[in-house]
Image 1 (cartoon, one colour):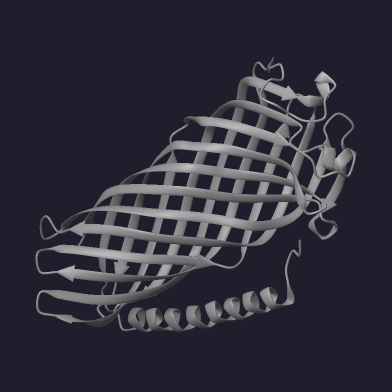
Image 2: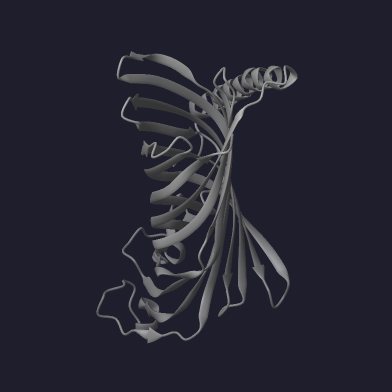
Length: 337
């Protein structure tokens, strides 16, 4: 597997340059507004979210899966607040944050293909374990700056388009509790099967934390009706992400610190707003988020001996990470002026 081709690297460099140029242009427009003391309109939007999907953790060997851990968000419940400022010329700034409810979010499944490592053979799965996934904490932050352009319409409907740039941050942590393991090597076999004996595990076996820092480029199209209804569709993209994760293996005494870059984010979304009163706007939204393609380096720490060793994507090894979620949001926007 090629980690980053020259073509892909060139595309990412061009994209980052475009983001920087667009940020300068939009920031300059916002600065002109402030310099002219133009008062923006402000709104605050409390919301609740239900997330369903998985956080993904990988270990590679020879650019193939050596281990895969799937952490459920089925569901993950959150509450948050969004604040918006919009000037009359269409420049807008939005900031939002959310916190998840500590709770059981489903299960964690851990699969290994250790024959690849010990015998250099790409064979069947060798190990499997299943545990309760207990979310200790989770949250997100996002800031966007955009510019709205009228794209047409008239009469009973208006159409507008808003390109935006910004930054997003995710952080969450789980404990994998209780459950069982099925290790082929424990039974003198080399291939896992569902018929292998299940060895019970009590307490916390693994803790896992993921953090993402993601530059975002997005575009939103709004269709507004005279009946106080607005339908919006949007897509957010990023061709480069930063991810830092910590995997604590409590039973073996090893900690794994992963530093990953590259990858991609793809996020289409759909929302519906209805102006119930002059300053009250209930809304619903649904978005699909996919993150993948991240590779990097792992620092393996022996907590007893206090030693560290590294493995790298350039050598076909190292970590990977991903995210696949559907997020439903419901809230109310309140105009403040």
